[in-house]
Length: 149
Image (cartoon, rainbow, N blue to C red; front, side, top):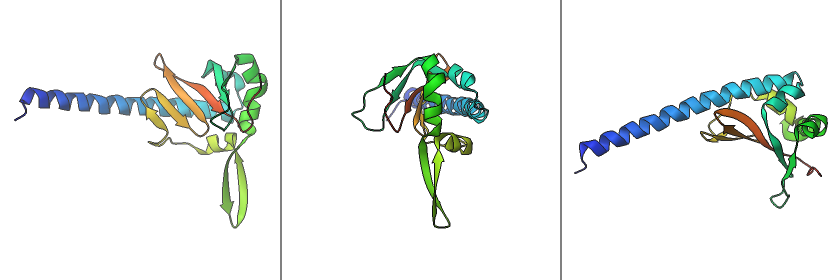
């Protein structure tokens, strides 16, 4: 027979984990809303404020190496390249319509359970986000064509 103390401890731990997870998901959704607004306004400076530097960039292939990018290079080159790259294709009335990362970000108003991998890590579209010191930041972005140093 399992002592009641262990059962209570397990239930308290489980409840705490669920509460922490729910708070983290709500926190991530709030961050995402602000991130989307900055992308919608094409506010590169605001997106840069929501980014951890050096930002890791990488091509789509696992063997592509990670290339760190500083704030200036991100604002001047990487942001436009990333936002303009193909993110998704949909078929509408038998016609293929390509969507850029920017368009896909703007359409994604609500995050799902698959977006957040843990309380401190999320993978949304072709971007990774980390919660650092309680603040969400864009930490890595995958590019169609690897970025050169």
